[in-house]
Image (cartoon, rainbow, N blue to C red; front, side, top):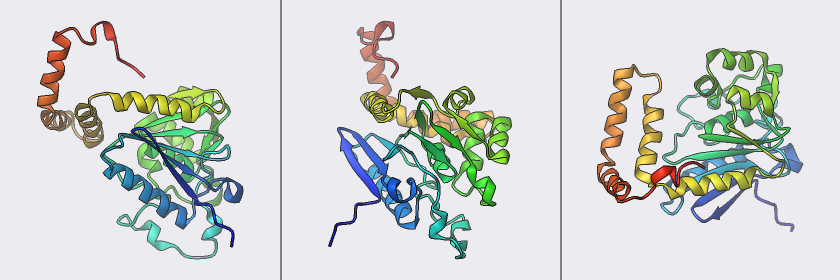
Length: 261
């Protein structure tokens, strides 16, 4: 009997975990229930692995993700996915990990696929990629965080434009909107994501993760409450911060050396 290829491929390169949706030939990397479980398990395992600092989410075969595999549920009622206590239909979309994830987008990131990209902390896309909420045409609601994450990333007006119209944007517009942070040449998306991941992993982790957590924890709070969240998260990094200040005082990192990705 022929061995069935996994729907999700997981690879570790140094301190980076690469998670790739691998259903291109079958469904343009659309996520069916089994794939959703595999994605969720892969990212939860990454989050618990102390040897791994950053994850990359991508798709094989020239496309990121065509959304949820509607063929897998056509004609069947799937009310559990509308339960806010249930896992997201796309897999990890209702989990907030403790470590950063980078979306390496090529080709289409549409419908639930765009929601997966929005779930990531950073997004890189190749020239010619296309992003949008194409499920608008079929009366399927956003259920994997798109209505909550997109306004936080691009602002309310731009988010409503994309959510209500369902229009698809290409990379130049996606970059201008802030939907993606960087556009790279075709085929360079994973390599560039790895470069960024390696740089993030090289930073002292406690402060970086505390700052990341403060951003998420403080969203939507009044300023005074958000500042308290920031101070509380930063307080746990005092020893590392003191050591870093001592290294700077001794001459390390002057002139911006070591900054940026």
